Length: 245
Image (tube, rainbow, N blue to C red):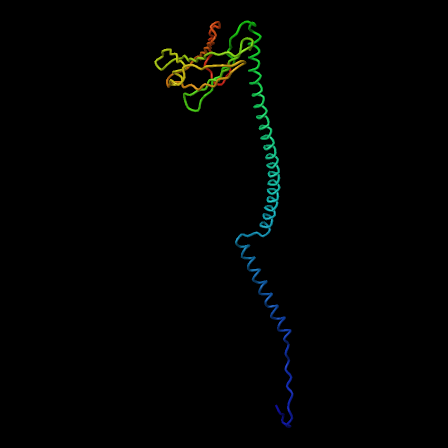
């Protein structure tokens, strides 16, 4: 603006933006601090203990570390147990396989032993057969059984021996009477006798069926040679499943 003398007058105005910014920042910080104090006072009045919470958190972290350590130890033990279990399973499989081989070997040796016993026990001039092992096993259906038996020579095996083998089962029926069933009754009329023709020994696996209500007690095996000079051989065995007789 021009002055009284006609010259322009100089007006000086002070402007301090930095001071204003500092003042605004200080007010904002004070407001934030005030709000935080009010927040903490509110939590304190509500029963919140910051130190107790921090201590509890520390205890939980320690407990978590212990649990993780126990978990690692349990996983290690579980891995060891799995290794032991696999090893034992392999050992059991090997043992079972070895037992099966031994049983097969024992069966072969038993047959050979029965044959040589028959050769040694009888005289050189006597010819005939002897009954080796007899074993009864269960069948696939109730009332069905399989008779496993072997015949061996009881003399010098100079030639083959022929004849007929018969089976009978005696026991008690439902009414309490003693009944004897021949091979025809045991095989519903399919077989009446079993022919044999061998030089050293022969095995038989004969399936039989026991009628319902009949309790078997004895199994009789009759061997009739085709030679007239050889007397029939009859042996009776107790009815027992699985055991060799």
